[in-house]
Length: 172
Image (cartoon, rainbow, N blue to C red):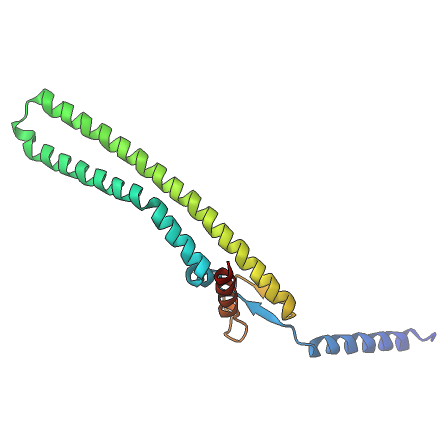
């Protein structure tokens, strides 16, 4: 074929056939709502319960310290007019120091809780990703998304992932 116009038409026709064939093969896309998985799956609930058990005593202790501080502050405020200047100043300094110590303990508690929560949730996320990969491979998906602005119920496989995670948790 020496005619360049005829060659271009032939190439264009072949390309169009390929595009039409690709469009005829529909993509299989899935969507997983990660937030729901981390809220509703049995391993996620177990992780949350473990954290509550692990940190409940420290949280209760902090609440008791906060209540004592408030009580001491209220008592000082009530007694302040009748106290000598030096005594009032000493008690105010003591309260400020106790409050500073309480704030430090509360920050440490929050940091420890956040660190443990991240550890527990990362383990759940890792298990969920394995389940998603397994679904991807066995059901021959082309794409599975975990973040989307909008996703229709037709492609939402969140329940399938939760069910698989719960089944895996039951066998452990």
